[in-house]
Structures are given as structure tokens and as C-alpha cells.
Amino acid sequence: MKQRLLPLLCLSALLAGCSTTKDELLPAGDSTMLELWQNRGTSGRTATEARSTLRRTLTSEDSAARQALEESYTRTAENEIQQVFPRLPNPDMVIYIYPHMSGNAPAPVPGYSSVFPFYSRVQYALPGERTEAL
Image 1 (spheres, one colour):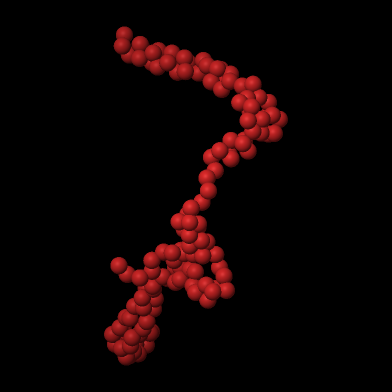
Image 2 (cartoon, one colour):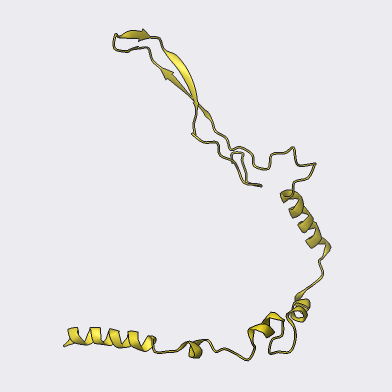
């Protein structure tokens, strides 16, 4: 009995959730798209008037912070020489190859050292990212 009732209950809950219409969930409202485009809502004031009440004047601290932000991300003649995207460290690995025999007719190869980069690709830091070790 319970095994038949559970699927029936789930099916009825699913169908009840799909029984609402689009107009019940999202009513159209009084404004047309042309009125909304022309910044005329139902409240009578335009979007420009509403935005002007939200604006405030910048303080000297705000303008100094903005200036510092612009200087750090804008390329000028002064910072053109500096690296905006510095290379990340890629240490050289030194490997020593011991003396060995090589080839079809074994020939002795003396020991030698070889140097190769640790990472196969060159990686760059983002602007402002720390590149030195902590």
C-alpha cells in the first residue's frame, strides 16, 4: 500500500508545482517597453532623476584613491619601462650525468652536468601580484 502511495504522492506534488501560469508568477505591469525605454516608469520620475538623488560628491580621500588606482593600472611614459607583467621565478635545475657506456658498440661517455629550467613554460604575474618569496 505504501509503495503505491509514495509515487502517486510525488507525481501529484510535481503536477501541482507546474500548474501555475506565467502571468501569475510575473505580472506584466502598467508600463510598456517604449515607456521603460524612454525612462518613464509608473512612479512619474525618470531614471535620470532617480540616479541624481543617489549621487554624492567625492571627498579628497576618494579622489586620491581613484588617482592611485588609475596610476597603477594605466600605462604612461613614466611606467612604460617598468614591467607590468613580471616573469615569475623559474629556477634552473642542475643535473649531473654519471660516466656511462652508450650506443650499439658501447662507447664510454664521461660524466657531465646539464642545466634546464624547472618549469617548461614561462609564467607571468598579474599586475600587482607579489613575485618575491614570503
